[in-house]
Image (tube, rainbow, N blue to C red):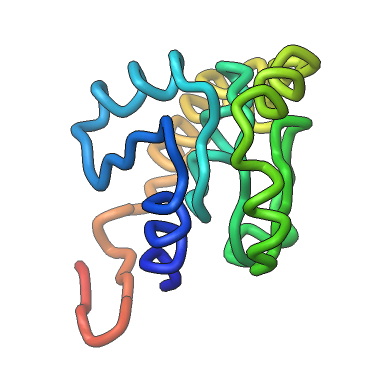
Length: 139
């Protein structure tokens, strides 16, 4: 929700490329080389810090999520958004980023393996778990 307003703001600005959808690998390649990421996507919180890419977080969808120093929360304030549509300002901010990602945890793979081993040893059947999302029931 709200993406049309973001696109309207970009249509007023120069030197910006709007891309609506990409395959995952293409997206990560562009993100790695991007000047910044703008929107309300969790990718700005989860992937962008690893690449040192500023994330101009528009709206409140990502509120109360752990975040790196790459996030600039703009709320729904168009004036804040307009102030940040400045390549020099973004480049200066980007040069100060730590590339520390709060979601990158050492030993994550080992934790997953241990969890799966525990599940297997204790004979829990993951296939017995039922998930319900909206009107769709998964088994």
